[in-house]
Length: 140
Length: 140
DNA sequence: ATCAATGCAAATAATTTGCAAAAAG
DNA sequence: CTTTTTGCAAATTATTTGCATTGAT
Image (cartoon, rainbow over all chains, first blue to last red; front, side, top):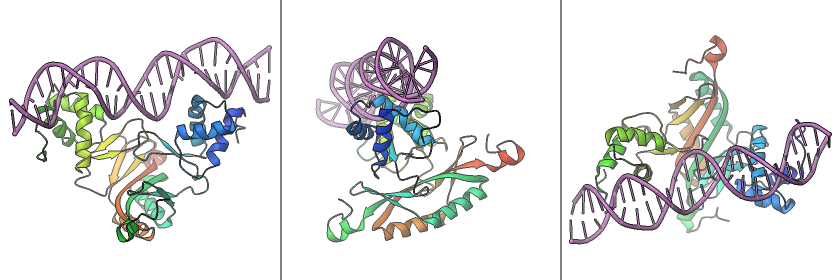
């Protein structure tokens, strides 16, 4: 995996393992904390230097949720076309797959003279349960 | 429009007019330059203070295109549900409307216990013309 | 031994904020 | 006149980078 001319080092291993020990989205800072549990010496700089490697190799997806920092999604390799819906009541983010959307995306792209290479769909919703029973059951 | 307790000032007028003189997406810095054509005295701080007002009133949409700074889309009021496709060859961004996608989004949201409040779809495509005739006709 | 990878701290870039001065109502 | 808004410059936040040192091969 790292055998593309890249050396296997302690900090790198810790960062990669930390990234895939979770199924949740995380920030660079959160990844640093998780990696440091595995290797005390891992530094912020190495996290920031390792993240683009994982993104470019398709193992991690860089996500923008309108916050001031970037998030990383480790579920991309297993579900390459999953999308996100964000609860505007509890801020929790859920993933879903929907083939019909992809078909339409393909069709639209073709009509506009493109071959579809990637997609990113984010929905924002208000919680129906919050409205009916007074509490957002999505909230953990 | 600004009559929600907000004072109509020279810099504000310049910034708002600059924002809607264009149909292109722009950054805060670009808006500053455009606004300064109309009012020399407009400052960066006022641009950054005015942008959230326009976003919250639904006149402008804040967009993330994976760059380090935010972009603003002035076409949102006319086409509230438009989506974007980005040419990965020339980086140009195109807008499109597609009702079928919205229907599916509504359906997915409902199934997951949400009322759809907003959506953001970005496609990335490679240019077919570039492949067939050797130049990307999308490029201006 | 060699050269890539590291940690640190300083640099950068976008955005935000404190504050005294200016302008709107 | 009172209160909001302003421009400026300093502060903040996430991220990147230079460099001497460490560690993998």
